[in-house]
Length: 317
Image (cartoon, rainbow, N blue to C red):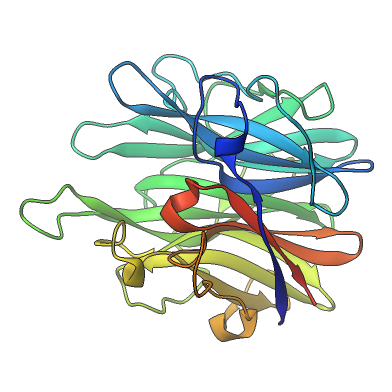
């Protein structure tokens, strides 16, 4: 593949974001609309105790992605209820058009004691054209299970031949990599199917994509698009520890392909895009989202510092 980077198209520091959010525009995901493209992302509100809550925001772009038409005047989804799986925020947020409805699959965060967080995947729906969403229910549609014990999230959904397919991540566990360090998590990409988008059947603990960095590789945020006759998946991957400030161990983009949506062959080199020599995406590329617009595959992604400085776009040539 050969991608042409269009550069950073959204810097959250340049806009007044709703919900008390400032900085960060993580996990951009597109919903193609009539004459424009709406990109949903997660930004952060800092609470009085210094902790963050992630909120879903959107920005509308013109057809060239060179101009922001508007930014959401309010957050797209209210905060989760007390004690629920998404009490402490939603990140990421995957929109989907299906049979005249606008749905979205959320990753809800809740804080823990012995480890920092637990996650699950929820379902929401919009009745106002994708401006705001309400929960189908307060619980998750996909969460931890017998052989996927923690950290189910990052759901990406498409419907093919009447079947809902979800690629998501599941945690294999937490580990203390150093005696004086907080535990870090490892997660892999899995797959589930559904006939209605609500009740899901996991391929329990089957790892869809082979490791490149070994068993301590963490894989995140898969998205899938048919390009020509073959299905392509883009995701991000990193080492499970010493990745926050060590760019050599931080997120890069990975790639796999499939002819049947079941068996995937990893081929990162074929993706044909990497960090820049300098600038906002020179240390990290993460949280990618593949989508088709105007007949061409596009790729949204975050750069350095996990999306603190916004997101960029590349077009497949």
